[in-house]
Length: 465
Ligand code: GDP
Image 1 (tube, protein in one colour):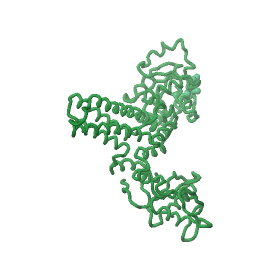
Image 2 (cartoon, rainbow, N blue to C red):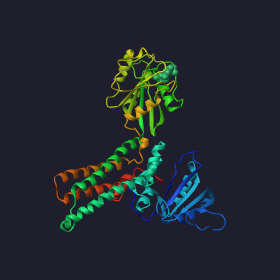
Image 3 (cartoon, rainbow, N blue to C red):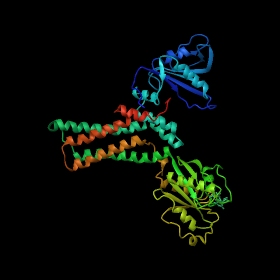
Image 4 (tube, helix red, strand yellow):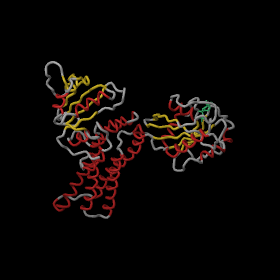
């Protein structure tokens, strides 16, 4: 969906999540030149007519004009241009939550002829076009709202504070400085002091390695935002549910002594080192005649193929068996897996090496006890390591996929300069790649805004943002 480019239209939408019976308050946001006159028109304020001054809050009622019915009791927040989120006049009507009251307030606003319903992401788009925030900050709003862990929220906040914008702009500035030196040489080589190609190349390659570092951090940051799906498999009774309970610290799975009782898929979300992890507990995958169990097994197979990683559990107290090996063979080869020996507390330490000698030793392997908690930390860190989510706490900034692809393109463009330098090509050749890298970095922050870029970014927003 394409959002119309800036107009002087006034727009309105519900800016908060709405759900029946939920939320003490909800907010209807109106932005544009008519926001104040619409607010004044639909909100009745008792007593002396107040001045609708910027950054003040008024108490009143949204009225149904026709029958004088009070639709809702509200607070009105006024923010005049340019000191508002969109940079335009904004009136926010804080009404009651739930479903009906807020929708009736919105309908009342939209009944006004000088306002239309906002498109998804349109408030944020206006904020960008009016220079209140840049593209990376607009994206950060979406990321902050979608954050599923504290670390993901911190990374989004760093971007909202302008962290990515500053970092990228600083690198872009370095490139612009070098470009102007080079361009001057293209035109006035004889009149200026000579340039040292290898020094320039070093400067530019430093920018390239900074970009590559950002790309590397972004990969780990993506895991913090998106999370991982982890399928937990193992033969019946090896302790999958107990392990899941221990990891999620919630008694969600039913723990029992009977084999094959975990018939359905149980999903639970845990946070490990800032990474949201959806653990999918599967019924033991094995041949069975029981119809219900067959269903569970089919679902397990599904869970296996949709997982980012598989944790396969076996029982250390009885050792590595043929059925474990059969199950192991069912893990699709492209999916990384972690082998867990559970019930370490029962393990007969003296006899174990002999019994377990058939374990596929090449795999990452951790021994744990779901009962005592032994090995839990090692399990968590091995899991994150396998997924490339190591040291996520150390990341301060994380580019999103769009930004990461651009940073990576810019780095490759700069990489081409090595060849240009080796071949001692004239300065014009340097300027071509340099200009391209500058343009790509400009796309990250929106220095180079195009309609396609705006559409690509804001189409992912929902109404009210
Ligand atoms: P699942 O069928 O793989 O989900 O296995 P459960 O989690 O239902 O566990 C089967 C049995 O093993 C239960 O009686 C658990 O209490 C027991 N169990 C699970 N983990 C451990 C462990 O680490 N140590 C001991 N001693 N018992 C465990």
